[in-house]
Image (cartoon, rainbow, N blue to C red; front, side, top):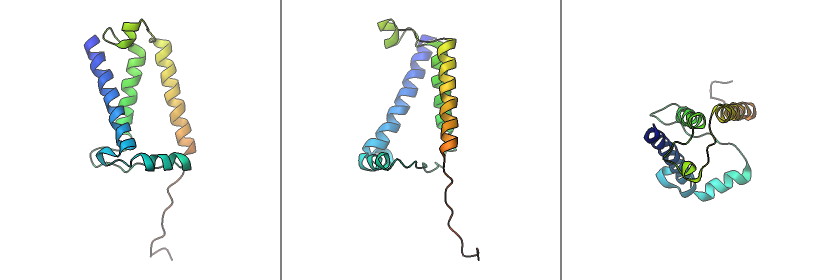
Length: 124
């Protein structure tokens, strides 16, 4: 089970690291640091372009489930947390992580703005 948790942590961590390098350094078709800084300065939420191979948001849902799994099960014996003697896991931590995730989703839904549509030539 410890090897499985290690693989899960590495998969989640490397996925988040790849996403961050895409955004900040412009790798893999990302916008780069200038565009990201401009977005932060404007504080305008943007919508990512949907990919052809998956529905938007599906990958983040999978990562959320993986992170929630780690919050409930703990780091495992093959981790830096175990090496340093930290064990922050269990029902309390998993439930807290779940509530924070739900709260974050509710805030995102409440704050979203509709995408403006452009009138077509047939709209009188």
